[in-house]
Structure formats: C-alpha cells, structure tokens
Length: 359
Image 1: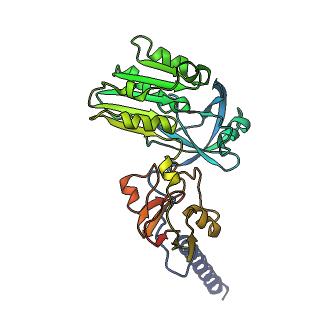
Image 2: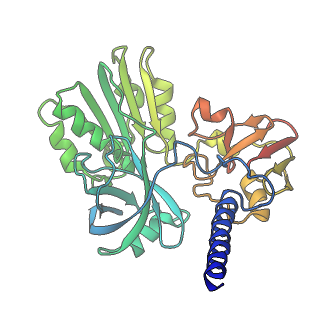
Image 3: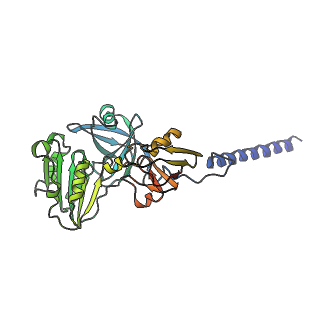
C-alpha cells in the first residue's frame, strides 16, 4: 500500500508545482490578472530611447577651459558612436542631463563628455562640477544621435562656447579624410573656449578656423560666415539661441541646416493655449491641464513617477504615446513618424479639448 500512496503524493506534488509555475508566468504577463494582459506600453520605450543602462567609472576629470570640465568615462564593451551623438548622464541626485560625446569614436572602452558650469541653471551642471570625481561610478544611457554628420559637398560649422562639443568629433573626422570644411568658433573669451588649441591646429595650415572671442571682436557675424558658400554645403550650428537664429536667417539657398539645441526655442517656451483634459488610459484617471500649466506638471500630480528631465522639449525623457486627440507639438526633437502617435508632455499641448495618453 505504501508504494501507490507515494506515487499519488508525487503526482499531486508535481501537478501543484506545474500549476504554480504557470500561474507565475500568467501574472508576469499581466499584473492585473485575472484580467486580460494589456498590450506592451510604448510610452517610455520608443526605438530612439531604447538603449541599455550602464554604470561607468569616471577615470579622468580635467578642466579644459574656464568653467568647463571634461569627464572620461570607462566601461566594458561600450557601443560605438558617430560624431554628433550624445549621452544621458543620470546624476547622483537622479537628475538626467544630456551631454555631447566629444572624444574618439574609435576608442571602444571610453566615452568623453564636457560640461560648462551654469551658475543660474537648474542644477545639473553644478552637480557635475561639484560632485562627480575620479573613481566614482555614474549611470549612463545611450549613446543616441540626433545631430549626425551627413554626406555633403562641403561643410561650414558655427559653434558658440560649449556648443563646440558635438562639432569637435566632426572636425576630426573631416580633417582625417581631407574634406572641405570651415569653422567659425565664438566665445566670451579665449580662456572660456574649450578645445581651442586642438581646433586651431586642425585648421592651421589653410585658415579653415576663425576664432571670434567676444572680449576681442564681439559676436560671430553669421551673414559674413555664410556669404558665398556653394549650394550643397551642409551648415552645422550649435550654441546660444541668438547665434542659431542668426545662422538660420542667413542660410543661403541650396544649403542644408543642422542645429543642435541645448535649450528649447523661445517660441516653444512662450507659446500657450487654453485648458484641456488628459485621460490616463492605463491608470483610469483624468487630469485637468490648466492654461499655462504643462501636461507633465498635471500628470505628475497623479503619477509622480513619470520620468522627465529638461522640461524644455529637447531631451526626450518625457515622451509618451498618444492614443487619441490632436497634438500641438512644441518640441525640438521628435521625428515626423514619432509625432504621429507620441508627444513630449513637458512642452507640447492639445489642439482640442482632450488627449488620451498611454499612461
């Protein structure tokens, strides 16, 4: 009698184990089980931002100009990047800030970024300058590239201050292959302009580089820089908004313009619209967005965990999928395809009375 009883116990125990495993798998597929599993959310998971999170070590910290610090970050098997790419740094406080990669794309174990201290900024640059030290680990995301170096007949670059960081790897690459390029580089003073010695050496032989220090010669004259350039020239500009506005206004016909902003355009910041409602589809809640209030601010009153960073429409951290409603896009980042069904909720708004977000 003992043998059949043992066999029965074993069968029951095995069935129970299989049931528990199946139940775990079902719950993992849908936290709301026994309700049907919801589709995989797209919000926060766009192809543009679906990059691994890594922890890198600050192996070198160098002052490269007045108020500018360069960080060398090292880690194993880092993804390759192309000139114009940037990296997200998750700072010790949790702030997320974007910095252009300015090192060597062919160095497989190193990322290099540089940041200027902005005394009246929102705290990110101060945290980098005051808290990040050699030997410290930092979380990074990326790299991503929204400012790629395209193929062109010739190139003209206009950089202002720290705006040189995404352009520097482009200059190195173009110089190495003997391409036709010129650079106008402006800053408050020569001492405040990072990488100035290297840049002047890159263009020393044929006068490709024009340095305009404000304390010596005022601001770069965008119209003079772009005068007479041939159709088919790619014009790249990164720096303060007035400089980019001037380059945009002076762009000759037949040339392409590529801009990299470190802050939102004034038009996006100043534009406003009336109040509207936002339904949070997954959460089953509806929030009221007042005139002058961002969608992000209204949503975070209900869902404080929603990620954000720049609050100016150019970093992409707060991108959310839109299920219904007409979007008033006011960002500097999304592609035409992404604008079809998603928005940056820190700046963009609703053209009607109601939006439905995948939140």
